[in-house]
Length: 169
Image (cartoon, rainbow, N blue to C red; front, side, top):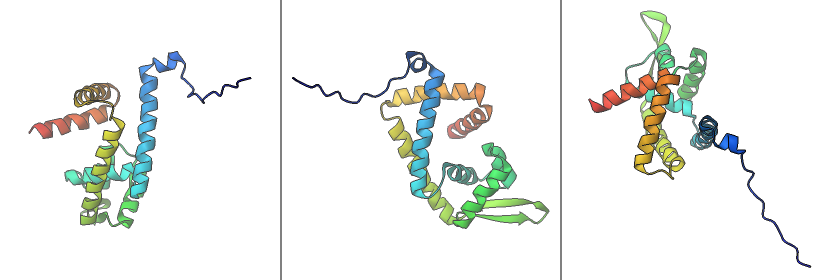
């Protein structure tokens, strides 16, 4: 008598879900987020920290309120992030002498070094996540996502358009 051993199979999604673009976008978003959180955690920071440092690096937004608005973060959430970045010596805050309610924020030299490392990490994460796509496919995907963002995330689309204008001079 022979006994067949069956290999474990990966459960398959119902065809209805697998054929849904929005379902796949949502699942891919979860997977990208999970991978990013793990990698940033190993680096001792969070993707939110990267975003704050990137805004500061532009140099055009220096108050807590301007940073929160640029990232569409809750102002209370931003205060906690700035506390964490300040504890690590990556940013410094100062009260505005003309308006005691406002705090200006600047990145320290250590913050610039950390941002460079986080940028390298972000590029590596993106390259790994999009490894199955060639450059043309990546460009097409990005263009399509920008178009969707223009409709559903106007704040992101606006930021992307500004970046494209700045990059093109």
